[in-house]
Length: 230
Image 1 (cartoon, rainbow, N blue to C red):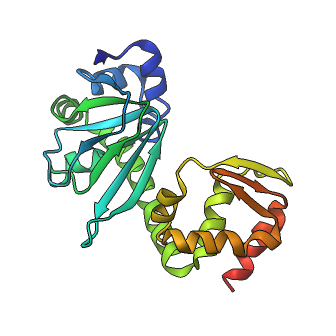
Image 2 (cartoon, helix red, strand yellow):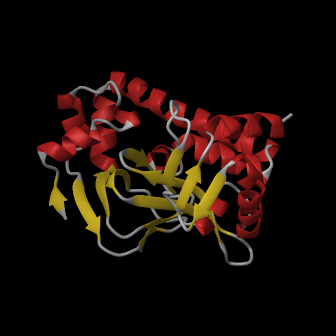
Image 3 (cartoon, rainbow, N blue to C red):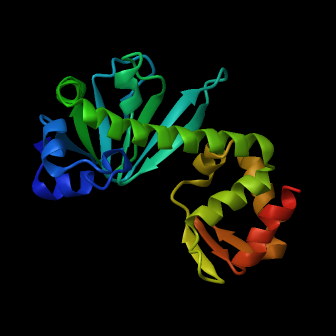
């Protein structure tokens, strides 16, 4: 556990939540923050735990998940560098509404809620800047939920792949940032449905081996996404 150095502050400043925040204000907001590296996969917090901090991801990945009635994890959101997460909890109930696990090699900034909120109360103008960041995140989540409800499993997978593919290329080679089991949960389908979706997309040039995915015709994939929604 270490205090933030200038390079870590530079990285934190690129998180969407802090867009528009001047350096001096950012340093004050992150007063008392510390960096922790997780060499192994670990549970960061559980649903109902006191939200006395939020986090900035400098490296690695975290999964927010709920537990189903059958005791299975249902991935709600996946976060990678550089972004913030769990900040809404410190403003609302004061408790984490979901569970969170960190993957091995993840490096997080732990931001204590008390000092963060104290600086905000002294500088109301910063609240509006941060509120815009939270509003953008909520809008993205709302749009994503609407897409999940209206799209087929193959559509959801196509949308996920296109989000990671280069926009100006005809062919793309991707390494999935998640395991296939986690990806299936992330887009709201079963692993079996994911396998069927990949098989269905082979005729339009999608090949996969483990986490490696090759898209031989990005334009065909875009057409597939559009036509499948008609």
